Image 1 (spheres, rainbow, N blue to C red):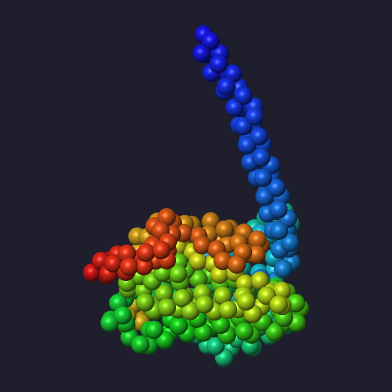
Image 2: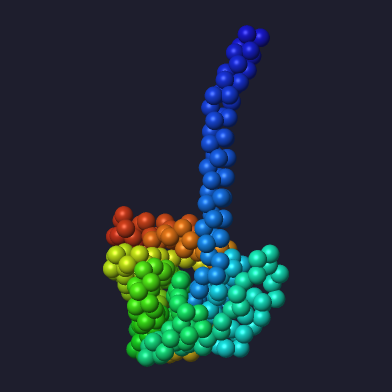
Length: 310
């Protein structure tokens, strides 16, 4: 009986002096984070947000995420018909706080000479750009030996040079206004490289390096730069990927099919941008482990990748 009473007294003491303070602290922290998140999202109202690759996948979900917060969303891609569909979907939403009407603009990231004229179009309608989200891009499925040089060039033109040119075109106005945000939707494959993705991984590695340099240079101008590296997200990225000859892959990868939903990814990316994170990784456990192994034990990573290639 004495042992039972001692045990109960010990439990009561633990709950009173340890359990309750910890629970209360966690609850207060959660409440503060919730209030902070709502306040930062509220700051997105009427912000001009330009999103490339907005006709489907992550770009389309990002359009919904920012539109829901009251942003002036500029939908950008090659496919005007799909952009119009996305715009209609946004306008049809019943929001508590009405958002500005979305703007649809056609742009092919492969045509780098169009970027200055494109940005001027945005300024003509919107006056400026608050947030530029470089999301547009294309993937690749083929070995290096079986990939034509034209495919390497095409993927680099779209994923890297087109994004760089658009960013450069938007920078002068942001610098003049002493503020702005630029986000790059890169990939986990911008941090690690795997077999049969050389062209895609190389373009994303280049984007990572560009983002790091840009962040350092733009700090003095109060321009925030965020590089976002998602793992598997369930989109049509593998269906639309290029083969070694430049044709469409047309196959849904098992990893992609089991990935995060595009809506979930977009919500996480919105948080990363509003929280002004320098970089953000959204990935499953295996890619995260691969990133760690590549940095900590590179020889083991090289061995695993060689086995995968075989």
